Length: 86
Image 1 (tube, rainbow, N blue to C red):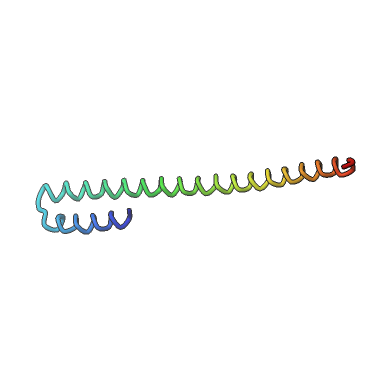
Image 2: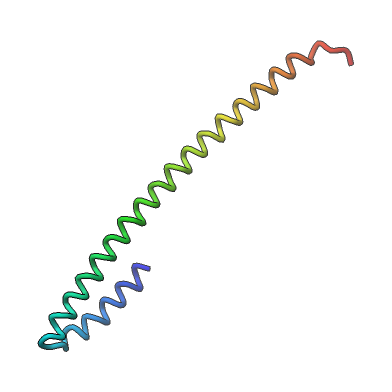
């Protein structure tokens, strides 16, 4: 995505260099708006990525805890049944 944005910026810079008068001013304003929106989007994507990483770490920790609890339960069951006649 960043590559596509860079390519678009390069193409637009050619248009900007050739623009004059009111169009040039409005073009510069629009370009600044786009950059602001891209920055906002990048911050949101970074926050989403950080949240996903945090959730994954919590999920992994919870999964490991549950595995340990199941193992302990299995040990208790084995302890209870180990003295039963076969």
